[in-house]
Image 1 (cartoon, rainbow, N blue to C red):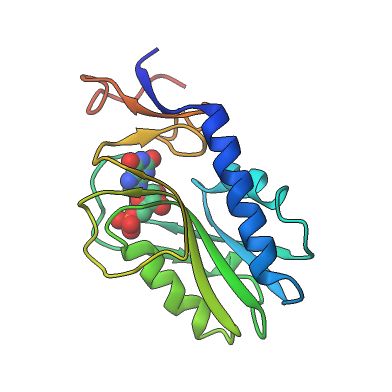
Image 2: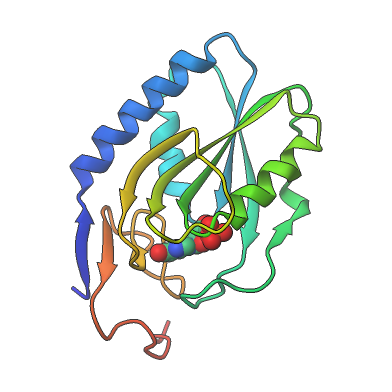
Length: 181
Ligand code: XMP
């Protein structure tokens, strides 16, 4: 396998369960909408909401600045077509990874101007030493070293999302030409 395990499946499960319980405690009785950032946070969304035993809605937003490469693209594109109705909702924005912070910071503003009652943030992973935009996530699963990670929703060239763990691509894998479909 060209991927080295960084966070195994059981550690992900345990931590996400803890986060879900925390979210449930803090949002009990509130009109919670979890807005997940596609595509990377699909898997963490599915697991997290099953640990949140208070009523809540889910919404999706598509934002991308990485396009099959491992460096940050210059413009962040937010797909308006998917924007959920968040008026008077307490929104928890969920992303797979906090890297430079540009994506989440832009999305917080994007949601706030749509009339949300509150906007907080949750990330599965936070990369050390990469943040440019100051933003403290309200919930964070794991802090990781500055390496390109895949699995559990995260991709390289749209592959590896299905891995049940978070891993680091082994030397030599990044920069390879795209694989055949
Ligand atoms: P920013 O820099 O805006 O980036 O905080 C957040 C988005 O960048 C992508 N990203 C990664 N995707 N492995 C990935 O598969 C990584 O190591 C990685 N680092 C950043 C991701 O889409 C995230 O939402």
